[in-house]
Image 1 (cartoon, rainbow, N blue to C red):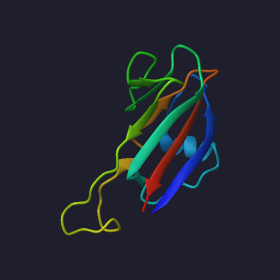
Image 2 (cartoon, rainbow, N blue to C red):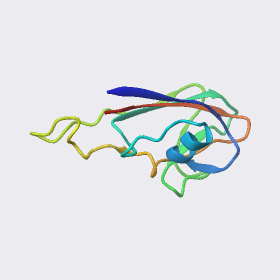
Image 3 (cartoon, helix red, strand yellow):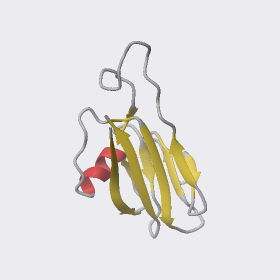
Image 4 (cartoon, helix red, strand yellow):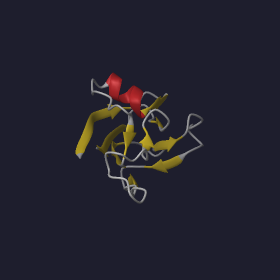
Amino acid sequence: MTFITIPDFPGDNAVHSIVSIMVIQGVAVPNPPLARMMVFREVTGGAAGTRLGGSNVSATNGIPFTTSDSLVLPALSFPPGLSAFESPLGYPLDQIYLRVPTGDTVAIGFVVF
């Protein structure tokens, strides 16, 4: 089990997948690109806040979080009979998107096996 952190990501008002943020920030993408647990924290920000969601995330769509809170995607359990290394379950890093407003900065961490 490895906990991976991505250097703080400065917002640019664009929508980025977690994989694209990893590439921008120079962090190796795990293969497969699946996380067992994820945590997001807005380090600096304005009133609008960061949004988490699918590819259609926007300023008004997605789960919002600001500097006063964190967002955690809880650890996934494994199907009966499979170990952590055999289980195909995980949060797909290429299908989770963030919209970080300009002037905001977000911290991202996750667990992989």
